Image (cartoon, rainbow, N blue to C red; front, side, top):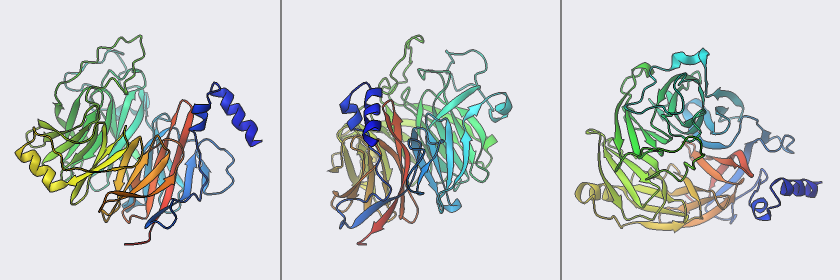
Amino acid sequence: MNNIKIWVAFLLLGGNLAVLAQIQHVPVGTQSLPVDAEVGLTLVQRFQRYNANPRVAADRFDITVNSPKSVNILDEKNKFYVHSLEGNSTSVYSLSDFRLLKSVAHVFDQKNQYLFKESDYFDYKFRTRTNKLNFFSGKPVESCFSHSGKYLWVTYYRRSYDRNAIDPSALCIIDTDADTIVRVMPTAPLPKMIAASPDSKTVAVTHWGDNTVALIDVSSNKPADFHYIKNVEIDRRLTNNFEQDKIVDRDNNCGNCLRGTVFTPDNKLLLIGKMGSNAVAVVDVATQKYIASVTGMKNNLRHLILTDSCIYLSINKTGYIQKANLQDFLSHIAENPKKPYNKWTSVYVGEGARTIVADPSGRYIFAAVNNKSYVAVARTSDMKVIANCAADSYPVGMDISADGKTLIVTAQGKSNGGGNSVMVYNINYKKM
């Protein structure tokens, strides 16, 4: 019977064995290898939409999972949030017993226009629609918490009526007590990453679509008071003058392809990865000015994170994680921002390195390796891969719990099916 199902899938995919071979769905209970590594992963729960009759209770069929792009854990409220790009929704789960608590729909019509305080975004123009600008479905991409987890900010790849992502898009703000949307704000085209400053006074929205990053004043505790300060151009803003009657590949027509975004611990600088090159753009938060782009790292930088002492980059295409001393990197920005910074230590984790997270101790980095369909674990002291754990096809987003014991990974869907799942791994530290 299984062979028949595989053959039918093969035919539906156009008889392309290469495409069929790259899709995998691993069983719950899968463990990382080698089994005696100092850190081990075990797949203990999964939410998926490809098998309506799973054999084990921990493998949960969940129709709300539809190309999940990212995940955020809110330990303080015992919840985690999964954003399904193609499902136009955010699924809310219990962290302790993995129940689906709620599905938040990113759909806006006559009933919820009160969520919009404004339609205009700086000097941007809507070109695909002239009326009912705020009637749309949003495709959620990434998110971040602000105000000690009170608010969850979620970016929309595009508005549903704007197929080429050339108009202003939007983001929403979810109150995590009620898990309801309390405000929607416009953005520049194609926002992806979003980050909140450590002091919860500023939120930055990075626009993949036109080389800009916006700064929002969130110093108030009331969403109605949140307001834009500046839309900062990184090098130059793109015009996106695409013909509306043609479909454009916006994943590649993106200029600098701005992606990973993080504030420095002192709230003074914003660091933004230029995925279209080998550089980190630097914005001064106080003056709202673009300072420079620091080069010297490998090309195709996708994600960046900071720990207490280090900065880490994921290099997507060639599959590396790079590490540098954070204070040394910041000193370089202050002294020689236009010169390359070359003090990187690198480790190969596999082509398609996407989201990375660090455990609370900073001893280990976990990476979602999209092209190879596994999660890599690297030891930070010597930048060596110590374990890999198989995952459903196309792992892309991840987050780690505050105690470092739970890793949640999303596997996106693609035209050939893909992972379409959310995987929960237990982390076992055998040497601390």
